[in-house]
Length: 636
Image 1 (tube, helix red, strand yellow):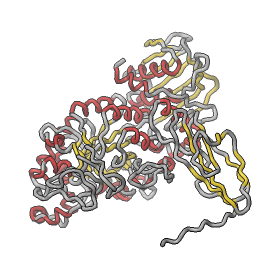
Image 2 (cartoon, one colour):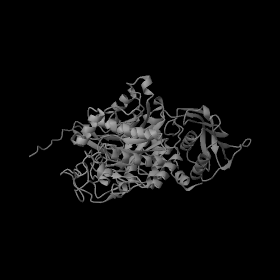
Image 3 (cartoon, helix red, strand yellow):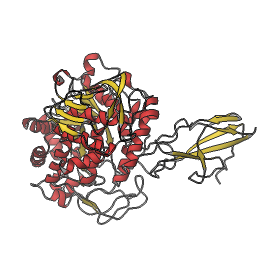
Image 4 (cartoon, one colour):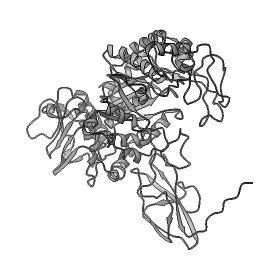
């Protein structure tokens, strides 16, 4: 077994997600169909592991190593089944009749058969691992069942921005492991932006010598209340990027690189000022922006937002970008190359005699059409290399490039318009909870974020196919993606906190049929067990607040508070005296009765503490029995 596989296996140790009451057997995302049968399969040391699939050696190794960690013993492996021998069989026989990425699991008292090929077999193994409960007396009892499963969407993605803050290779791999576990098949890697260029380009070494480093970053929300005055730097060598591509591919994940153009180009322009429409202008820095170091010349941005200094549409710029993209294409075998296309102000283009002359020469009526010309010229080059471009929905402005796929982020309007023009679409609207850098609750305990409100329940409620589309237009919705921008995410630990459990909710809306979605089952039956698994692995997930607690005020005199712990093995502590609860407060064990006298109120404050010690934010519920309204002091 190779080292990478052993690392991956180590992070898949489950806490036993199956409970008899759970119709989904603890599996996230919920399978298309699960049919219970009579009896159980008893997994013990006598069980044989048989791989009869054409490409299942890695999946077999993965499953056996998981069983070692789960049960404390390895299964004897064979290619041939023996009469009356209990066995787990991995097979590709009949997989040609399965939908793409589909699999089947059949459990009888004598055999577990996992059918699939490639990613389908791999996903079948993930589901088989998730449905295994804890061992009892060196045995694992698995219910007899038939599972038929395949994805709703072929594109199931997450985006990670490594430009605002840099993340090490070790974290990228750890993150990819979790994506694979939840059947996410696309990792969109945002590699260039105003605050950092993160990929080695051999033809243009200054991109990383200059563009990968900034001397500071603003503190807090824009425009900031100070500057950290600490250097943020880092980039991935081409060999490191190739290693990530290989690592992901072994887990059936495609890595899509993003090279931003024509906007979000400050880091590239700092390295090569001639790419700017006005090379001799200093980078604009607002007087309100706390800044580290010089303010002269072209600079990597230290704050967040949208900046006027974008790539100029000269032949020199196109040569530069084509050379960059050629090196990117050589690293990343993905069908798609993401070219950004969002938030590109036209201020400098409007001021530029060159741009105005070019527009006149090309018969372009405005700067939006100039951007379309820019995008289409890049698309032609990418298409000639056998690839396709994907861009944010602003690439619709001025006319959509002929073969482009649109990633709809500013609500659903861009995706709807693109589908109506018969263009492929990936839905990723921030307004629907898919910007997972947004805050997860309204508690004051939440860390600083860019804003927004995106609890996992909001993601779970989202259907990526807009109802306004016709049946024919709906086929252009190819998938759904969650995005993590990192202006306010400085560490891998905070990235994990923003990602989980929201990635689990994403996986279910990306994979499961709409009629299989069940928020109560997801949040109360399956998620608590999956979060306990992350807890054991020391992944810094966001600990949910108590299930059943109201954030709205409740009125009356007698209350029965009935709560559920959102993490298996976790505990709820509460207070009624206005204090912040901890282990020193009351431990919730059974529903609590609270009596509030007439004219008074109480505030129930709770916190969840997971087995590892990780804590939720505090949640408050006001219990009001006609208390007089609190007076607010008038401002002097």
